[in-house]
Picture 1 (cartoon, helix red, strand yellow):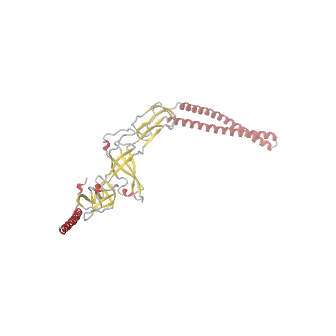
Picture 2 (cartoon, rainbow, N blue to C red):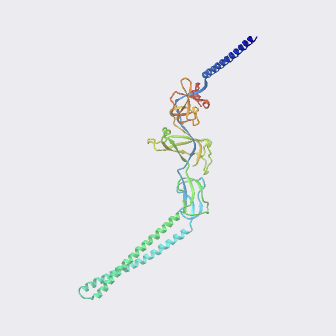
Picture 3 (spheres, rainbow, N blue to C red):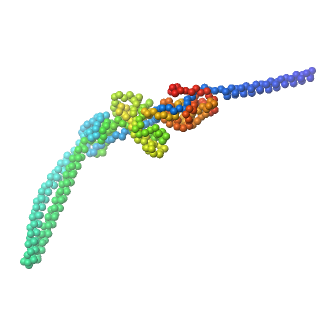
Length: 418
C-alpha cells in the first residue's frame, strides 16, 4: 500500500509540474503573439506632401504701434487774453489759418510810445541840421581868418599872439563841426532803433492771431475763450491721420520677399478701435472689418547691404478715418503679391515651439524633425530648411505621436487642406 501511495504522489507532482511548465509556455507564447501583432498594427493618419505652392504671405502681429508724421501744436507767440476762438474740434484747417485771436493791452501803448520817440528824434535831427549849418559856417569863417593871418604873419604884419589866437579859433571850429556830425550819427542810430522797436512791436502785435502750423484736423483745443496765456503756451493740437505709419524689426531671411513699394492688406481682429482724439469717421468704412492698404516706404539697412536684422517702415492708408495714432492688437498683414515657395500645411507643425514635424519614411515609420519656417497664410507655411519636396508630413493627431511608430497615411490633396 505504501508503495502505491508514493507512486500516486509522484505522478501527481509530475502532473502539476507539467501543467505549470505548459502554462508558462502558453503565457510566453501569447505575449510573443501580442507583441508580434502589436508590431504589425498600423495607426491610420492623414498626411500631406511637401510641395511648391503659390501663396500670399501673411504675418500676424500681436500689437502694432501706429503713429502720425503730421502732428503739431499751435503755440501762442505773445502774452495775451483769448478774445476769439475761430475754429471747432475736428474742423479741417490749412497751414496759416487763424485758430485763436489774442489781445495784449500793452502793445498799442508801446507802439504809440515808439512813435512819439521817433517824432522827438526827428525834431532833434532838425535842430542838429541847424547846428550843422552854423558849425560849417563858423568853420568857413575861421578858416578864412586863419589863412589871412597866416599870410600876414609871413609878412611880419601881425603878431604871433594874434596868429595863434586865430589858429585856436580855427581848430575849435573844426572840433565843433566834428561833434555836430557825431551827434547826427547818434541821432540817426537812435532813430533806427526806434523804428526797429516799432517794427518789432507791430510784428508781435500781428502774433495776436495764432495760426495752424500744418494742414490737418483740429484734434484738441487746449484753451477756452477768455483765458490768459503767455508766449510759448500750446493752444491747439493739429494732426493729419490720413496716412499713419508703423515699423517692425524682422530677421534678414524674412525680408527676402519684401521691397520698398510692396503692398499688403492690413486688417484687425478683436482689436479695440476706440479713439483717443475722438476724430470723425469717414463714410463707407466697415469698422473692425475694414481692410487697410499698407505700403513699405523704407527698409533699413537696404536689402542689398549685409545685415542680420532690418527695420521695415509701413505707410497705412487711413482715408476711412477708423484709426488713430495708438497701439492696436490682433493685426494681420497679408501681401497682395503671391510668391512661389516650398510649403507644408500649418496643421503639420508640432512641438511646444511649433518648430518640428513628423515625417513618414518609405516603410511607413514616422520620425520627428526640426524645421525652419518663413511666411504663412491661413493654410500653409513656408519651409526654409529641414524638409525636401515630396516628403510626407503628418497633419492629424500629432499631439500623441512618438518617434518610430508605424502609420498608415492617407495623403491629402491641396483641396483637402483648410
